[in-house]
Length: 348
Image 1: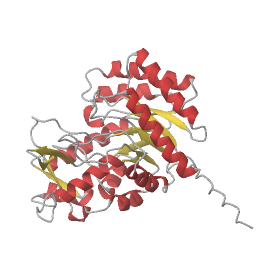
Image 2: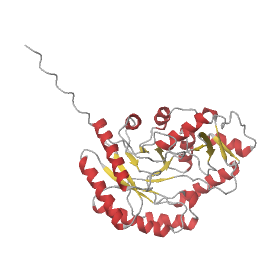
Image 3: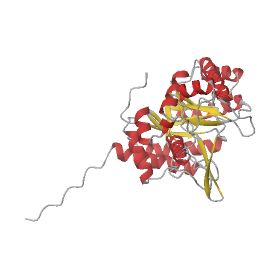
Image 4: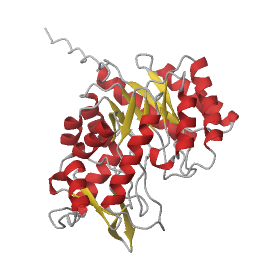
């Protein structure tokens, strides 16, 4: 059962563990934004989705510092957990023990994650086994209360010699459009969190590369057929082949998913400098206002932002705070529109 929709969404800033002094400066700037918009509730997302996980315990120890900061300031927090695909059973059990007693607004995961270059290509049989493994690990996370599953993009867009090309990730997860995301959330007994940029990127890739659908490529075996029927896609040689019915507009997808939690950033351009425009700064422009209007019409419980993945430095505190401030300004103006200016007195 989803949470009762609030009249004002929490605006969450995603934070990764950093050096104590840096974390304190960023958190102080976050509090300044919160104080500038007293009509809106704020929070932080403590992001521990490090990939690959070399030392999970060190990551969890670092996250405790951010949680302590939020708790002492009376700020609610959410937890972005590591992808189940990247955890072994020992790590999953350790993560579950760490979660005991914590009271986040919610937890969020990716059902799987991308396979790294150099690994053997996946097929549908591999894919189904990975989903089964994630389902089994999910059952071990008994303390991951109010768990959400986040969308991932389907295709990486690149520019080579000035020409846009698509390279489908050797992917180990599903969760792109309404059909497959909902099915995976049911498999993992959780809700859906929509990363709007990832959804936009997938829809854009589908328009650029329409041949990557089952209308052109038919299932060749039982695994491919079972995968297509369940998730609206099958996997062949490391490429996801999508059902031809996946050609939806982003507004239709948002309305059909009708979830209560969103991740929003400012990547209104698919390509930036010849690569994905990933988690860029939110600016008070037409793109942000239009998409946020559709999100706010759903009555969301929260909107999370992070910035920015393709700027240097990769996580700039100044850009993160500017992005949060722009998000708050748009949401505040939408929720509390200014009254119309009084008309001038007509001449006698």
